[in-house]
Image (cartoon, rainbow, N blue to C red; front, side, top):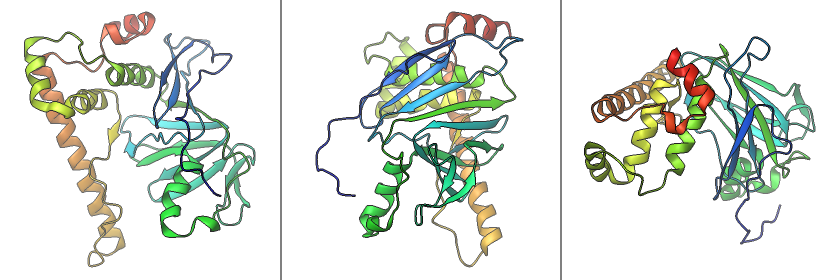
Length: 283
């Protein structure tokens, strides 16, 4: 596939119609994404709170390598083609093909468009075409890749958790509010001091507090390519995971404690839809 040197930036768009009981948040740039996040709490007739994520063509957005400790995550591909990384297992899923496809032969390897991510499984996902191109183009192997028929379409993925609760919607509302907050937002004296001291780490610091409270644990020390041959595969893998998890817990715990002393919270009223906020405060 020959690519032009210059492309207009990807443009995120809200789905039409909007998924029921959701509101859209659009983020532009090379990692363009449209989040469609629930605005109401679960009810007896609708207990699943699904967030729908749409990625326009040429978006390099990915979820980032992370894991969950209290929830099993479900992803359902609705449109387009995505890569999914699950603890060493890389899959290319195509909505048009109806399941997992081979990037070498194009054949269907496994039917089904729902991916289940168990607790503690390190995972990442995003557009398949962007991932495959960035991974193989620099190695002179790009011509050997077979892209799924819908690789260049908009990607649409539904995401929810088991147990079904408000954690995921609260996470997306507060995360996006921090990322898109204006630079001149009023802060307390102690928060201004921390912001000055942290510099460019101010936003990652706030996100770390959200990560800690809302069960989203990013891999901050990725050791996937650093396994020691002297340890053996099983011992080496165990050492990798323990080191990665320890780094994540230590950094996020430090951020959480610093946030506690400066009044920075993971969930705030100004960042959360009214109905979700009321239920959150009661719980």
